[in-house]
Image (cartoon, rainbow, N blue to C red; front, side):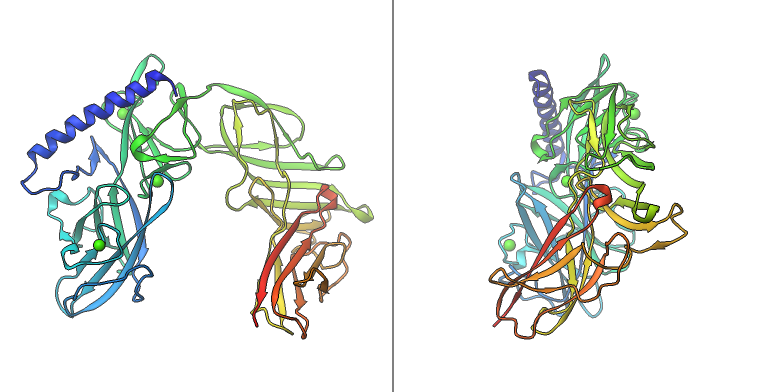
Length: 461
Ligand SMILES: [Ca+2]
Ligand SMILES: [Ca+2]
Ligand SMILES: [Ca+2]
């Protein structure tokens, strides 16, 4: 980060502290010093979390006060400190047979709820703007870990969850063209960290002093394009010390490839999503195309390759969770849509000697997509079979504690290309206690890949 950027943030922080001092001076006597407004200018600038209310006492809660008579239910809130370590805060909601519920919050996160940690009912001006239904009670309580904060709580509509709102934002100025523009980084998920894919940046692009939620709000990703400029953010950072850098603007030429493909595909249709909005379609591999600078993910891929018996095999992938992202505008000029694939397996059933385990395999690309279907023939709808029948050379084996192969898949039905997603494996009746491994080698040789996966389980004495 440049010196100028740092100076701007420091100056802004000083201004903010001055503004805060004025607010504190105006606040009622006895008001905690860290009470802040729930807005940054016109912007409701707090994040929200919701956690289920449960009857079971949370682990880590070691002592409780003598509650008034009523039903006690608990919720645990997860915040993060500057090292991204979780800080759990427990709340107990006591509902008397008739009357207003009471909330206790472990403000100092020491695992001890004290009678003095009973949260106050919020006065109308202490309620975060737009938080909770107007007819519902809102409580406020201080939080000392991971940082001093005022936190508001309310029950969700169905009374099954406790919602929490934490004031969480950092102010900054961002250089857009020749102007300095006011910006606010908001901790949307209220965990006290600024994180990519979770939090947001508001920038007053048109300089009217307001933050327009539709056009001036940007998801916080590694590279955020705002108006004529772009900024990069770390994966996560403490909200209190939010930093950013200027990033490349404009567009760049990139090439989409599947490095493992042994042959020319018959056809390709890939959808690439930009993290700042919009999608692009790729219909050819190894061909340069121009994309606006930004961060992209592979959203889906349908690829047809020559199969055995002169048939065409169609493989369909779609996004499931995060994976490698593509950054256009940096050094990178190619993006492998599949990358190195893996074949994680999961199983149903209690692993015991003699038990038949039902195993599911989900071949996964390093770009965060899973293999949804493989079908034979040129029309996907024509002869689609979910992962085909089962046979070798995809192998699923059970490896014993001493490293010996103890079993192979039981249910096999031959299929041309030898791939499958589900199978059954029997744990030998004489299996000894120890650690066992289900080992998968998945056959995707038509795509030039043989992804593997391992799942371990223990058989107890
Ligand atoms: Ca406590
Ligand atoms: Ca956050
Ligand atoms: Ca504006």
